[in-house]
Length: 171
Image (cartoon, rainbow, N blue to C red; front, side, top):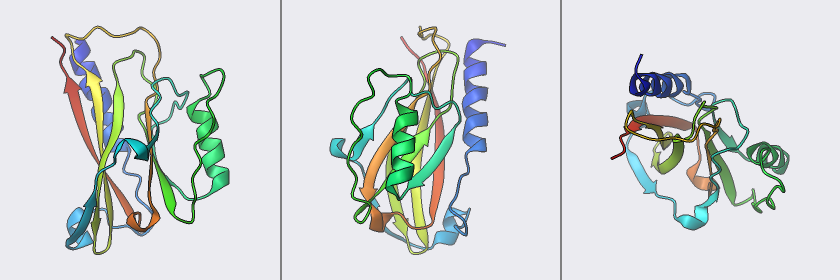
């Protein structure tokens, strides 16, 4: 099997396996009703974006408490010495969104939370996963990309994760 097909299949499997919705959240975006607002993160919203996080499982999470946040931060930086200071989050005002791609045998993979759309009956979080194409040179080290955002708490209600997989060809 060629390298690009392997990457594409891996990203597709990861994407299909990550339907981590909040309990009771509709799984169909059409069931959410009309769009009320949208939000795009600025650079200050990104709390972390490590590529070698040690987070070997793919996940999508909404963090709403300090204990979970401390545990998640420690996991995201388990491969880094020293661990950087944990970003401060006021959970009375904010929530933390986490998109982890899981472990891959090479570098060149990435994940990012692109935007949020608030609907009448829930919020859609749009995530893009990137995989290296067959023309890309990659590091031969395990990678575990994670994107962690701080978002206003009022935007995060009954979250549905919408995933898009992209294979990036290098020149």
